[in-house]
Image 1 (tube, one colour):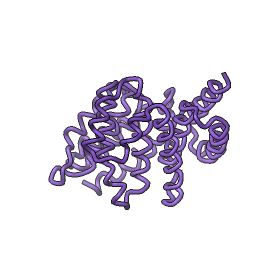
Image 2 (cartoon, rainbow, N blue to C red):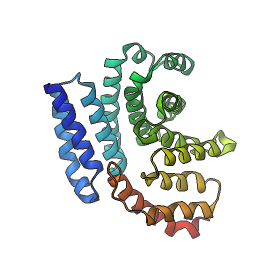
Image 3 (cartoon, rainbow, N blue to C red):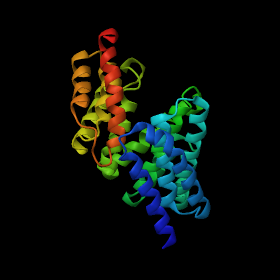
Length: 263
């Protein structure tokens, strides 16, 4: 009962942060949440719900607010460690292949099921944040193929999980490189569009990512500006998306202002 209560508390803390529309309140207040969740995990270190909630809180805060590279690396490490611990507790056999070659990793991934999805997705999300924080490290970049197959498996198991979150990540991954270097921008666009459908257009950050990652890569100013204007025209307040929508509107305004210079 105590374990369940602490896990719910962690979930509630994360939800409260995601429903905030004042960025400075979250920026200044979230570190206290991080310390609190560290304390909860310290007291219940094998509570996988708590570990996943802590991982999500860490990478959400890092992605949204941390600009200092060294600090981002430290926080991304914490997020990845929490998610990996949760995965290894619940999926010990799969945990053994995390450092194996891609073909062995993919073979083990095929044997996962829907009950494993929260742990696969939690680990993949934290891994994505960790790779971003360590983007100058080739050993981190080498994890991108593993990251891609993780999110592809999430889509196979349940594409609606986390409001289509795996599609968003795959959209970014597909548009990270131009086609001449192995990128798949049209496939990435399809993932973005599917994520918009699944979230009923409530997650405004998808439009921003699609504009920044896809429209700029294919040099489509009309689509770029249309996507960003959609973000600016929509209200930010939406349960579960308010914080990210507030960030999206801020980012959309900057990108739209830069549009003429870029194109």
